[in-house]
Amino acid sequence: MTKTNITKLLLNDNNNRVTSTASARRTFSKRPPVEETASFLQSLLASHGPNYLEKLFGSKARDALEPLGGVEKVAIALSESQTIEDFGAALHLMRSDLEHLRSVFMAVENGDLGMLKSLGIKDSELGDVKFFLEKLVNTGFLD
Image 1: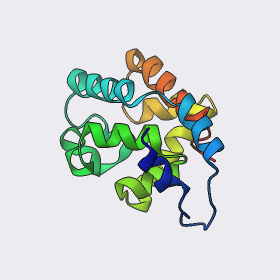
Image 2: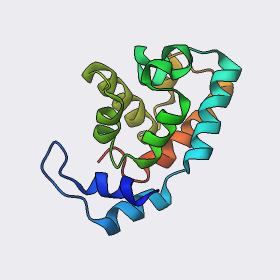
Image 3: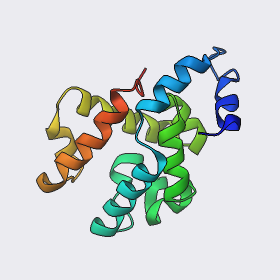
Image 4: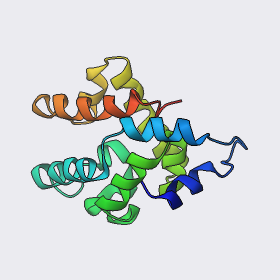
């Protein structure tokens, strides 16, 4: 994480709260690194097609995440956004897509694999998707 990125995060967000540097560093030190996140997203797209991540991120995730700025931009946003709200703002997600993503994370947090299956995530994919999303949940992404 660059000093510029940390500085941006320390600015007032939509709720007019200021994130402390120590808190931001703790969050980011626990998050999967950008390279790992990008690799994971890319492998899902390579294995399941360019629209696979639409199941998680909504319609803007079509065409290998291009409408969201591509895999690298999404990976950076996932790794550097302190909360799901920050992530949504960074990628200009529609409120409906953000709420859908929140419900996916809540399903993971609550162990509701049925919800993930209802999105079309196959049994063979559940473990990897759940493991990845849990890493974000466990670092306060839903707070």
